Image (tube, rainbow, N blue to C red; front, side, top):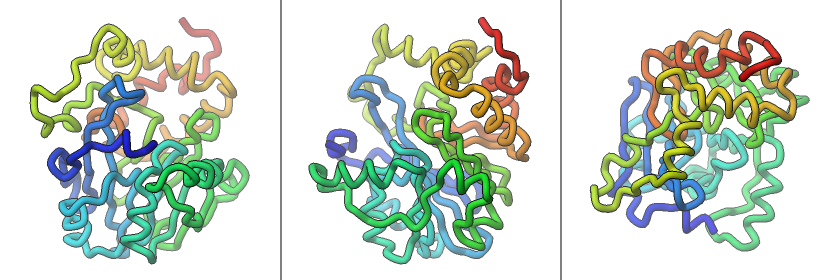
Length: 280
């Protein structure tokens, strides 16, 4: 049940950060598999038109609603950037009924099934479902959205990742394509005695999900696990993203990479960008 994944006191632990004048992040604690502290993060963007788009929405608390209102309150787009980051779509859709729901193929069916047993997940229709086919045809989401964002659908990824570039601020917004653990900001408002202490398994998990140092663990994880189903197609997606102009990466899990995002991206995806087929 999704209720087990939600902090008991979300308004007390959420970290609201003005990343740019147009972009706000909402960072919260989250345990993967109930064991690994990877955190969670939603991102709110004010488009050039003045309307708002929210990516990977987190709990809609009083403080998050106030922040939305401070940016004009006109939420036009609610985006689940993969098949995992969708739990709070229904409450945002209820609060902002004029918004379009956007997500990858497979997610509407997953939500329909989950809604039978989970009261937090509704059956709201998706205005746009991104597929391998329509993404290659330059899918239309909205005139103002399409003017501000580039979109890459990494369909090979197990979670069906949608990666977005907010061009005005040169910010890459994504869910699970890149982690950047440990999740320090996301646990910064959690009382010290309540913060989870990673054991041996937690430290091992972190070693595959950090961009620090040479990021060898992450490189191996991406090469041997994430991209193995169709490495050529995965490489093509990575190369297209690498061709974008961005300085900052906002991940759902771990620390935001501000200013050095392009450098980090090229480091962790070096093997894919080189296009070589034999790796350690």
